[in-house]
Length: 306
Ligand SMILES: [Zn+2]
Image (cartoon, rainbow, N blue to C red):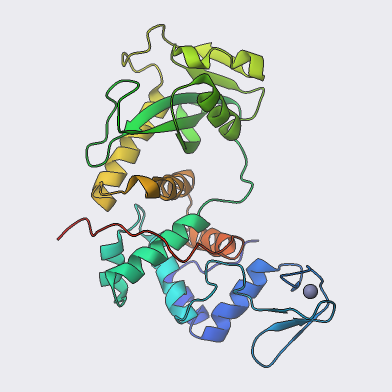
């Protein structure tokens, strides 16, 4: 059973102290017992300064070492409140919204924290989609997203994969690709979809070798132009993604940060039917202690609204 608070009251009771937050991180990071961060030895003892001294190599590990919380000077209780808030807003939150809601010192702090949390939303070694999967590409062009034909200059290209769940949409994957070449699109499909699955695409020539790559390739339309809604799931995901970027983030996304937003959208979408928002909180904390720290010098974009 995953162990997470169900309600705000439960959350407040449980994470009232720094020590309680720290213990939760220890529990999620090392469910089978603390290990040395450097040599992975389980032979460690706790020091008075909340470190784990490795009797094998002498390294001292903190539960924050190697996580997105490494080097943080802030109180863990504040981090926990931010993670709770971020996962309980169904559509997510902008940096400005977060700064206001939790009284963070500056827009810059709010933005950096959100960016670190987005990085944690990518599950390490996450499963690929399987079964029947629709695949299509979409262009992202800054403040005016849209599909303006293939090869549109100066735009970012995203491959969207949506798994069918009966008539509904199952899980999704979104991934930036450099161009519409066969190599780029095949790599994207291979990263997102298990071989042996049915992959439905339009008639774009670059998809022609998918059968040779081990997929059951179905072409749903002959012309590589926007036509009837023959890929309904993937089109729906694209529409929701655009609305989300424009609504929550005002579309003001620097292209170099787009990957992080793709991850956040995917994280939220794939858990949209979770009955308990606390479960998203649990996953986020779990992944936050499982990833490497974000490089310190993260380029920041400007506030989207004045
Ligand atoms: Zn060690």
